Amino acid sequence: MAASEFLSQRQEDGDTKNALISSAYTGVAYIGTVILLVLPYFLLENPFVALTSTLVIALIIIGLFNFYISVAKDYNFKRRFTEMAAISLSVALISFII
Image (cartoon, rainbow, N blue to C red):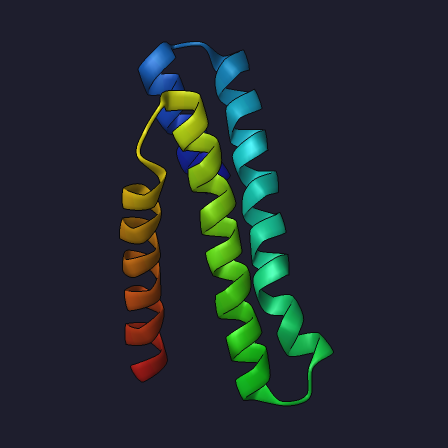
């Protein structure tokens, strides 16, 4: 994810320093998110409770991200949150079924 962000920012701006900073933020956010999402499986014995906890954590992360974007760019929070949550949970469901 960090490498993709670096390439994307460098293509857009042409500035390597800003691209490095942006990719570092993306990498740290990605690692932090993954840790939060897998943590219930290490802390809880019941896999169904861990799955439910992971889904709740995912919805909280989506909500925080969308709240930030909605405030920063004056977007409709409810519409963006619903859309992103539906897409994310659909992908999770398809992955779980597979």
